[in-house]
Image (cartoon, rainbow, N blue to C red; front, side):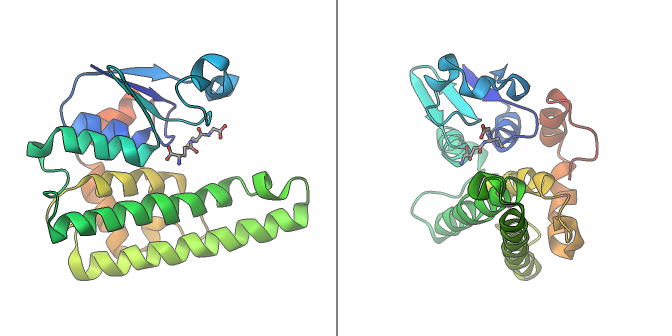
Length: 213
Ligand SMILES: N[C@@H](CCC(=O)N[C@@H](CS)C(=O)NCC(=O)O)C(=O)O
């Protein structure tokens, strides 16, 4: 039995959608950010970074949203949410997942919380925020071009965990001046994936309104 430690629309959302898509039984455990529960001594024992999510899978305790997604898809290979290991398709899956989590997600974090880098220097905060937004926008453009030529999903017609990951990040990025949906092929992917019952169920459990991203 899996236990996903989550907060609505946080980095737990992609693992949550994947758990739903795989049809697994799991418990959701709220880490109440409103009370800073992610920094409690209790939670730090399972996630020393004090960040959300964490997955507990019997004796295994796992942090980092992407690692959790990889673990889930590997445990359920027949569901096909990742191509077979050792194939060129799997390599591309790694590429896009790494790009999403390592490049786009990190830039979005800086855009959302620039003061974590700049402290109370307001002018620097503004510069960092705008810079991060520009870089995140360029990454979204790369994704849009890829989806135009190779879509409609990251792996063509085959649904993969990378598609869920983009839905999660696109929700965070909605307030951008040039939001993800402004891009034709990103919007097409978002429409397709947010229409899936698994995605609707995951966000409904989290209390997220119908308009996901
Ligand atoms: N790279 C981590 C990032 C996790 C992360 O930053 N989570 C945010 C919520 S989206 C969080 O817990 N923030 C609380 C904090 O920084 O105190 C992952 O993907 O799991």
